[in-house]
Amino acid sequence: MSKLTVGRRNLLKAGAASLFLAGVPIAGFTKDKLLGSISVIILEGGMDGLAAIPPIGDADLMRMRQAISPASYLPLNDFFGLHPSLQFYAQLMARGQASAVHATAFPYTKRSHFEGQNMIEGGGLSPFSEKTGWLGRALELAGVAGRSLSLDMPLILRGHRDNDNFYPASIRGSGRPPADLVEMIAMGHQMDAAQMFTKVARKSEERVQVPRDPASLAAYAGRVMAQTDGPVASVIRVGGFDTHANQVEEGDTDAGQLARQLSVVDDVIAGYRRGLGKAWDDAIILTLTEFGRTVAVNGTLGTDHGYGSVGLLAGGALPSSRVVTNWPGLSKKDQFERRDLLATIDYRSVCAACLEKALGLDHDLIASQIFHQPDLPRVFEHLFA
Image (cartoon, rainbow, N blue to C red; front, top):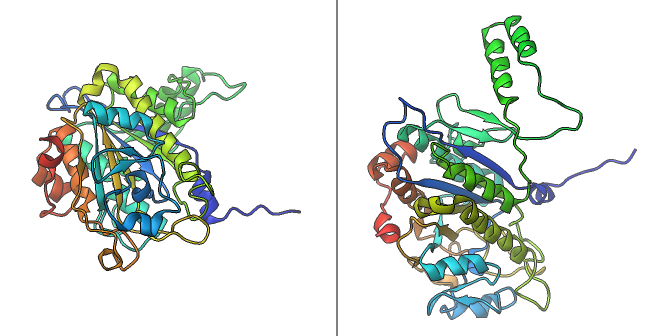
């Protein structure tokens, strides 16, 4: 009998996009009208920020990365360009509805996918130190409940309360179970099991058909979030950013694996824009990735696990377009451990600013109760002034 083995790296590339919705206002529980919505796009694998937003004004870029830097980059300003796959994002930049934060990362430097992804979702001080997620904790502080459109509740949305989840699917030959049958099953079990079957009964009434491609998921999320008393938060996962090899195609630095995945991200942002409609004006979308890639190119036209990367922001809640950075330089002496882009901005501060804008929470409260870092710098003015 043949045996199928899926390696760790292939497993990371194989995952399809998934959507999670949370933060449903509840009468009597949600205290105030929320200021807007917040959506997170998790880029799994470690996105190469030096290719997504190339620092064209840094003389060391082409000396070290000419083999993988996009040739047809779109100029943002005298120092930074934009990967040509981010066409819709470029339009938002031109309209003053997108920004980028460069040379940034969560405070994690050990380059493990699993530890890094846990850090960016949990928002703790070390990997696997949190059982809840920073967005879930923020939603609780804002007084809104969480719900996950998935078979599981992702860590980033988990809070201390009993958040629920459901998974819209259509199984051939299945039908809606009779309510009296579910009630009879519930009555024959202990309290905890009875509550579980009651939840099943409620979920069986929700029949939602959603295409599984990332752009359609984003458009659906936007439509639901735009509804009165709809969810205020969403999370979409997009994999395929672990570009150890063939990050670009030989002879065409505008094409390759990274270009394809950045096109997916561009489509996701465009999907949110379509779905949100007028609610776009109060929306914030931001990307998360566990780390960046090495400055140097490896022997297979790829890059290895690094440190600093770039965060992409979009939405009508942004007052203007800008690239926010404290640029460290790319020369060997300026690199982190003489191999990676140094992160000079704590990306938790960016997440905190987005929470402050969307949910109306105080920065000091976010810093101490959500990220457990009371002295976390406030960058709100750099993004939303």
